[in-house]
Length: 324
Length: 132
Image (cartoon, rainbow over all chains, first blue to last red):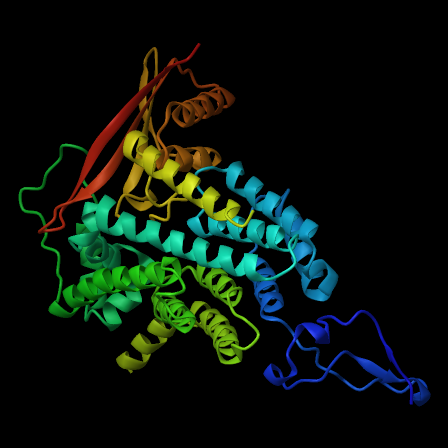
């Protein structure tokens, strides 16, 4: 039997320590076997490739931008998933970065923050692919996540007086339809109370004032939920920011990943921004080395869990079950 | 090279904070990572549009055709974004052959009482556009 490479191995064996994978090497075929189907062989993959692949998948899961960039972003993302050469093409990632920049500029300032972070991330990918190792990508990932979370904490703690005093979540749990089910399920509000509160929170025209404004009903559980959300999110975001930005000598690598996974595992159960979660998880994988197999699996599992969080109306289903 | 992307993030986020403090850019937008940090967002901001002409003074509901321009102006009520709304209103009124000599835009935001949560609408900025 003579073995020949079917094509360029998608993820070359020499880049990957065998002990850390436990999978087969490059695809091979028995040429004496005629036209029999070649044996199915799984290619070993590097964490960087998984990070890039998850980023491409995130681009496909939430198509974005105006008509003149959206199809191109989707097409390049599909090609990246199909072709390892495209996945590792600095040019292709540079093109994605440019299109994300166009998407942001097109309706500035309306793009959400994770689109900016996506732009920085794909730009960092493009730059890292021009260098030899994966260290540049891991470095960028740490700094980008750390800085994004540091700015998020800055806004919540220093720049927004209505966050730390609890008003943000007290009002948002009542007025934002995306949190309505959680307000009922965890906060203990009835549907009628929620509806009445929403009406009471409608502003009157400037200068107008009701003689007897309706009271807003906030059961103790709802206040507790608002308080827990306020301080919980600050604690989680601060933990991620510190874990990412402190020098490696002060924070163990595994702690960084635990903080990020904990943030994604809890926040995106409630926060309706799965796209942000997928991006953070893809970036987290970008910091892994070949020996961190367990964490790699945890990130992929978390990526899938965030899909389920976003697609299953769990709070609505639980509310329905509770009502019998 | 590897600091380029983080440096870009710092530059954009710092600019966003500056614009937010000086020009009412909402914390939720502009790349400063202020989402889910304040009630000052699109759901609690708005723009009132009043059209004046001889024998006419009318407050308009935001028509679908200019929703994007209004959303942009509500997120960042700068001269250029408010002027874009006013010009779009004038163009629309002319399409329907309605007279218009002045468009007055009032940008407002809702504030919630710290204790009772009772809302009040506070006008923040008025922009007057005289049709040339």
